[in-house]
Length: 226
Image (cartoon, rainbow, N blue to C red):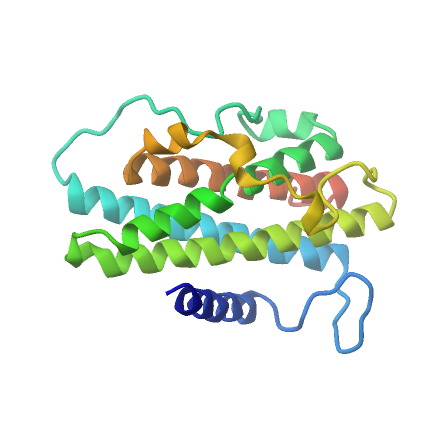
């Protein structure tokens, strides 16, 4: 089963890469790689983050329509990323330095790896067959996009460091230095959240990541439309 899942994930990653990137991204000019500009890298991760938020919003909406077609679901939720301090809007995000804003983006993305994996596993085993295939496929797609987006943000942080616009202490440099998703929550946090709450929280956080990446691009590479 694990081998099948790995193969499926690989196919999803390849499809997503072809959808957003026309050539392999590399930071140091390896043979056969296209070395994009910092503006190109930002454009790609912003496209990926927009796609991730769009798919998560679709899944959240479909979930509500299928399971709660007539219920008012307005209630206060406590997401497992509640202790990551995030700017409330664009204006507050612009007040943060590049280092601080980059750290916020990195922490948000890191915090969702394992929860999304568990969400996929749970949805793929769900007994609601009418919704099962659709939801698990969407959850798998979201996990794939998140994986690609984290890689893209890693490349951007390294590029910014090489250009001297970001300090060397920001972000992560290698798999060994990655902070695991579990550092941001306890298992009890996830156990207390159902699928709907997780989708709500991820939709919220993916929107934040998308908006923060746009602000980071504008503060790093100012343009007339910023």
